[in-house]
Length: 91
Image (tube, rainbow, N blue to C red; front, side, top):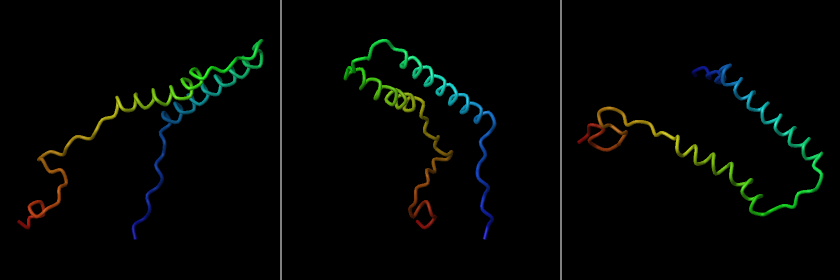
């Protein structure tokens, strides 16, 4: 029985970028919480603004992913993994 493969390791560069992004989000969250604690009057919730803030970022992320998504190229020689009698040499 073959030996199991070791788990993939994240490179240091990827780990640093993730930690940097996490620290930025944490700092922004702390700044917003501090600003909210010192706000002079309570804000009246506006339904359109709430929906825009809740749905806007995920929709923008989906659009960005869809725009940058690339499909793999077809293999050379026209063989696209089709199965059949001719592809298997039986015909």
